[in-house]
Image (cartoon, rainbow, N blue to C red; front, top):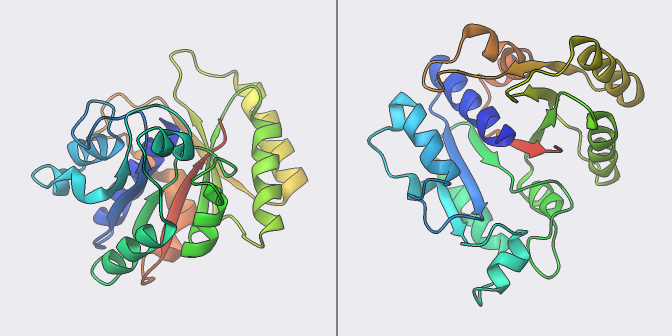
Length: 232
């Protein structure tokens, strides 16, 4: 859910700042169709006021029933995910909207098809990754491995956002230590922590602070792609 919440806040942020963004979930798994209760696009369209009367199917390129890695979910349905098809959709939308918010399916090394991983999709599209990381225990290892994988492909993340959306908040001292470790060993700033949101249609102002720190310089940009990469 962290990637989708981050994507939601990005969409709301850019609309508020006078942009006309577009959300794309290139590959949705664990979802029978774009209108399913588990559809990430449906969640976004429900809670972004500018999209409530529009069709969430416009934001999904591939949709598969089983909650598996895209390669296996598509293979079980006798289908193949073509990265070029995703690129074509992104190219089309980027001529009309700016920026395009691209939400990844899982982490960087999740198989997309027989030959490509999620990180290959990021590289192909030129996306500027924003890492959605768990705020609590385990995030140091996961986040640093994600950053290392990006650097090996010569991709620099735009920033890191910690998501603390559990019913029981992570201890503040643990969050502080996690931020210290991630920043110290990666030289990438953690933009902030997004806590549990009560009303997704109207999040509290502090929820946008990490987004503002990362994206304020991107507001006037054209054709930027922003990607939420879960490492939780």
